[in-house]
Length: 152
Image 1 (cartoon, rainbow, N blue to C red):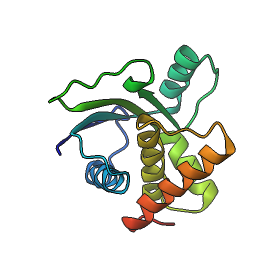
Image 2: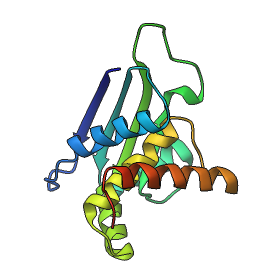
Image 3: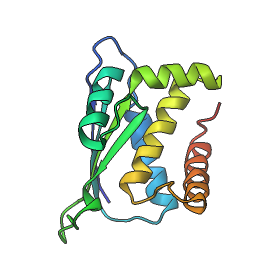
Protein backbone atom coordinates (compact mmCIF):
# COMPACT_ATOMS: atom_id res chain seq x y z
CA UNK A 1 0.00 0.00 0.00
CA UNK A 2 1.16 3.51 -0.82
CA UNK A 3 -0.12 6.78 0.57
CA UNK A 4 -0.09 9.91 -1.57
CA UNK A 5 -0.76 12.72 0.87
CA UNK A 6 -0.47 16.47 0.48
CA UNK A 7 -0.62 18.90 3.38
CA UNK A 8 -1.19 22.46 2.21
CA UNK A 9 -0.89 25.30 4.71
CA UNK A 10 -2.75 28.39 3.54
CA UNK A 11 -2.32 30.18 6.88
CA UNK A 12 0.93 32.09 6.46
CA UNK A 13 1.37 32.78 10.19
CA UNK A 14 0.88 29.10 11.15
CA UNK A 15 4.30 27.46 11.23
CA UNK A 16 3.55 24.07 12.87
CA UNK A 17 4.06 21.06 10.60
CA UNK A 18 1.73 18.09 11.06
CA UNK A 19 2.75 16.16 7.93
CA UNK A 20 4.34 13.25 9.84
CA UNK A 21 1.53 13.15 12.43
CA UNK A 22 -1.10 13.00 9.69
CA UNK A 23 0.75 10.29 7.78
CA UNK A 24 0.96 8.26 11.00
CA UNK A 25 -2.79 8.74 11.51
CA UNK A 26 -3.50 7.52 7.96
CA UNK A 27 -1.28 4.49 8.47
CA UNK A 28 -2.88 3.65 11.84
CA UNK A 29 -6.39 4.13 10.46
CA UNK A 30 -5.72 1.85 7.50
CA UNK A 31 -4.27 -0.75 9.85
CA UNK A 32 -7.20 -0.64 12.27
CA UNK A 33 -9.80 -0.56 9.49
CA UNK A 34 -8.09 -3.28 7.41
CA UNK A 35 -7.65 -1.07 4.36
CA UNK A 36 -4.93 -2.31 2.04
CA UNK A 37 -5.53 -0.19 -1.06
CA UNK A 38 -3.17 2.62 -1.95
CA UNK A 39 -4.71 5.95 -0.97
CA UNK A 40 -4.44 9.56 -2.01
CA UNK A 41 -5.89 12.56 -0.22
CA UNK A 42 -5.09 16.11 0.75
CA UNK A 43 -5.48 18.30 3.81
CA UNK A 44 -5.65 22.06 3.53
CA UNK A 45 -5.13 24.25 6.61
CA UNK A 46 -7.17 27.44 6.38
CA UNK A 47 -8.32 30.34 8.55
CA UNK A 48 -11.85 30.84 9.90
CA UNK A 49 -12.90 33.18 7.07
CA UNK A 50 -11.91 30.66 4.39
CA UNK A 51 -13.72 27.75 6.07
CA UNK A 52 -16.73 30.02 6.62
CA UNK A 53 -16.78 30.76 2.88
CA UNK A 54 -16.46 27.05 2.03
CA UNK A 55 -19.18 26.08 4.52
CA UNK A 56 -21.50 28.74 3.11
CA UNK A 57 -20.85 27.95 -0.54
CA UNK A 58 -20.94 24.15 -0.42
CA UNK A 59 -23.12 23.37 2.60
CA UNK A 60 -25.27 26.54 2.71
CA UNK A 61 -24.30 27.02 6.38
CA UNK A 62 -23.36 30.66 7.04
CA UNK A 63 -20.75 30.21 9.78
CA UNK A 64 -17.26 28.89 10.30
CA UNK A 65 -16.60 25.37 11.51
CA UNK A 66 -13.59 23.30 12.55
CA UNK A 67 -13.27 20.73 9.76
CA UNK A 68 -14.96 19.99 6.43
CA UNK A 69 -14.36 16.91 4.32
CA UNK A 70 -15.13 16.53 0.64
CA UNK A 71 -15.23 12.81 -0.04
CA UNK A 72 -14.90 11.84 -3.68
CA UNK A 73 -16.64 8.56 -2.96
CA UNK A 74 -19.80 10.30 -1.72
CA UNK A 75 -21.33 10.65 -5.15
CA UNK A 76 -19.59 8.16 -7.43
CA UNK A 77 -17.13 5.31 -7.26
CA UNK A 78 -13.79 6.84 -8.25
CA UNK A 79 -11.71 3.73 -7.67
CA UNK A 80 -10.02 2.35 -10.76
CA UNK A 81 -8.35 -1.05 -10.32
CA UNK A 82 -4.58 -0.63 -10.17
CA UNK A 83 -4.81 3.06 -9.25
CA UNK A 84 -4.77 4.61 -5.78
CA UNK A 85 -8.13 5.10 -4.07
CA UNK A 86 -8.75 8.86 -4.24
CA UNK A 87 -10.49 9.80 -1.00
CA UNK A 88 -10.85 13.58 -1.31
CA UNK A 89 -9.92 16.69 0.67
CA UNK A 90 -9.98 17.72 4.31
CA UNK A 91 -10.11 21.42 5.24
CA UNK A 92 -9.16 22.31 8.83
CA UNK A 93 -9.61 25.77 10.33
CA UNK A 94 -6.47 26.56 12.31
CA UNK A 95 -8.34 29.37 14.08
CA UNK A 96 -11.08 27.01 15.20
CA UNK A 97 -8.53 24.39 16.27
CA UNK A 98 -6.70 26.91 18.44
CA UNK A 99 -9.95 28.04 20.05
CA UNK A 100 -11.14 24.48 20.70
CA UNK A 101 -7.79 23.34 22.10
CA UNK A 102 -7.97 26.14 24.64
CA UNK A 103 -11.67 25.51 25.36
CA UNK A 104 -11.15 21.76 25.89
CA UNK A 105 -7.89 22.21 27.80
CA UNK A 106 -5.64 20.15 25.59
CA UNK A 107 -2.76 20.82 23.21
CA UNK A 108 -3.10 22.31 19.76
CA UNK A 109 -1.36 19.22 18.35
CA UNK A 110 -4.01 16.98 19.90
CA UNK A 111 -6.81 19.13 18.44
CA UNK A 112 -5.23 19.29 14.98
CA UNK A 113 -4.77 15.51 15.00
CA UNK A 114 -8.31 14.91 16.26
CA UNK A 115 -9.76 17.10 13.52
CA UNK A 116 -7.66 15.39 10.85
CA UNK A 117 -8.70 11.95 12.09
CA UNK A 118 -12.34 13.06 12.10
CA UNK A 119 -12.04 14.34 8.53
CA UNK A 120 -10.24 11.19 7.40
CA UNK A 121 -13.00 8.98 8.78
CA UNK A 122 -15.57 11.05 6.87
CA UNK A 123 -13.54 10.48 3.69
CA UNK A 124 -13.65 6.75 4.47
CA UNK A 125 -17.44 6.80 4.69
CA UNK A 126 -18.10 7.26 8.40
CA UNK A 127 -20.58 9.80 9.69
CA UNK A 128 -22.23 10.87 12.92
CA UNK A 129 -25.79 11.62 11.85
CA UNK A 130 -27.28 8.70 13.81
CA UNK A 131 -26.34 8.12 17.46
CA UNK A 132 -24.96 4.60 16.80
CA UNK A 133 -22.83 5.87 13.91
CA UNK A 134 -21.54 8.75 16.06
CA UNK A 135 -20.53 6.36 18.86
CA UNK A 136 -18.77 4.08 16.38
CA UNK A 137 -16.92 6.98 14.74
CA UNK A 138 -15.83 8.41 18.10
CA UNK A 139 -14.59 4.96 19.22
CA UNK A 140 -12.48 4.62 16.07
CA UNK A 141 -11.10 8.18 16.41
CA UNK A 142 -10.16 7.53 20.02
CA UNK A 143 -8.55 4.20 19.18
CA UNK A 144 -6.42 5.69 16.40
CA UNK A 145 -5.24 8.64 18.50
CA UNK A 146 -4.54 6.47 21.55
CA UNK A 147 -2.55 3.97 19.48
CA UNK A 148 -0.31 6.85 18.40
CA UNK A 149 -0.02 8.31 21.90
CA UNK A 150 -1.86 11.47 20.91
CA UNK A 151 -3.84 12.30 24.01
CA UNK A 152 -4.74 15.29 26.07
